[in-house]
Length: 210
Image 1 (cartoon, rainbow, N blue to C red):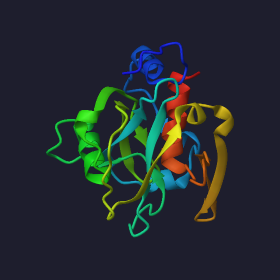
Image 2: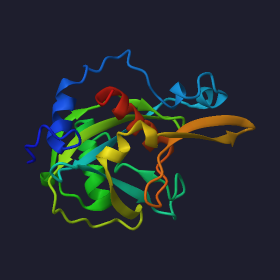
Image 3: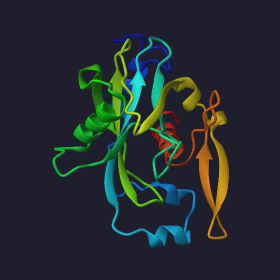
Image 4: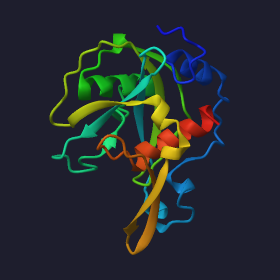
């Protein structure tokens, strides 16, 4: 495990920041609604569905990366979008952490013994009706992946340094029923990181790097 605690974008520094982050409280309010206050889309959501994603920070010494996926184009919902590995929490999952690890293995074949869970971020509520538990993990490098082609077209790494630089946090919008829906986006190396994934990344930045 990386011991370069003085490197601001190492896995060791990330671990220290997570350990020092404020405790999550029920009053914490993160999600798409922060960028779209009072938007009618938010009122249409039924009971929120519980989900969990893994934020996999790969230990590459002084410069850690974050492992992301590109969802399969054949999927009905959110096809082709960049996402963290994860999905719906099943009744048989004992915890959001277990659900995130299970979904990660099912989607990209990342073995649980390569991941060290170090904490969680406050839940993030998406405009599509999910309450997402972002689970924080450090991944030992030199892992192998087996992508589930039914769910994932690609997996790739983005430098943590890039994602935690607010200069790379752009804003964009799209029209929804003739109303503007605002979101963050962070294009990187031909990949468009946007929407809920970018929103969670922005939350990570706000809690750990400001």
